[in-house]
Length: 499
Image 1 (cartoon, rainbow, N blue to C red):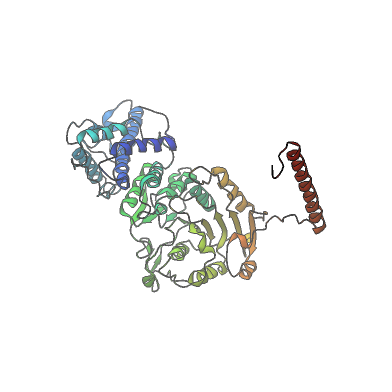
Image 2 (cartoon, rainbow, N blue to C red):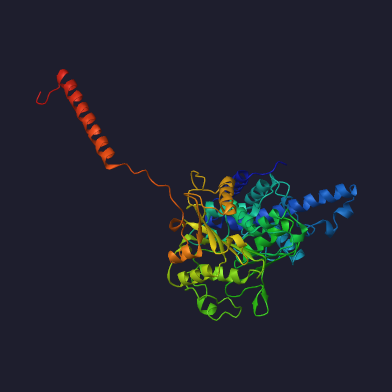
């Protein structure tokens, strides 16, 4: 059994091997309903074993001490460990279900709903799964360890990304609701610069990757405990986020399942609770999101007008603005680039947002860097209390050519992300890449924030007409000479028209 850290590509290959075992009894778009909870189960057992090993080493081999709850992130009841399922000879599907239910019940505050949210998985249906097939699947996952020592990044986010990208029905499942490419997440958190002790909130938290990255950039400080907040509409995804954070060492956080736009979970009386850092990649251009209810929003988010029910993009922006701490609040949000130039109600809201002088930076991203959509995206960076030298100005970055091309997918590499961050931090214009626009400049452009309206382009060298004519006649002369030489060769060779 390998002890080496697992790379992202190795994880993908391992999951593909699990999919091959499932191939036949179930459809491809159902794979993640089986593989994801099984990976969670194995990961929980592996992390529990890591903690047991640490406690045994600390206590000089005292097994009673190693089993104490305070030495573990969660409880794995007797008979509910991965190895117990692996040792099962018959009715393997029932053993899997019993173990998952047992773990949920033993950890109601942290793991409730983690497995049961995948209620479309029919482990005990022997018409689909023979014991032999399930044993093969269990043994496949047993060949690798998935503890924290073996995978330092967001394993569950990477696994979800892979399964969605590879097998999910893109017409039914929008992967953008679940996963944001890692380097874009890192760039957004770097823009926010969360400090230990500050609060961090993601109103569309998916699998929790942005909150995990915020803790990582705070060097896993214990001061982050109790300061992490997230809300996620999808039941199984919110359960994934809770376990994901817990397994990354975030001992105290609040992840709530629910519809943020219709029923925000974090409130302070008749207003929203506010946070130091707010970040999200909400679903792009969400339709039928509840604009009628928003028009009389009881939590004070109805500022600057109400977007239509055709797109919730600026409803998310307004929710996040109202969730920013009045003095220290910063916000980074991923939006489709259309939000930078659309007119109508969106344009009217964008105008008021710009005039409030909260927009510190706009980063237009290259197309094709999100797995679920061909729509080009951007990152909007907002701040309630901008530095004096940034007030009345906006840094507009054209990142459309700052990417790394790969065979199947454009990606933002770490170097690409650092280049865009450097452009923001310098806050100086750079030809072809960055402009610093004043509010007056933006007003003159009709409050459009598209990079093409502001970023200076390299001027093409204009050739004088006389030079162009001279080049043309020289090329014409050379062409005539070539034709004459060709005709001469054909004539000498005996190949003349009519012969």
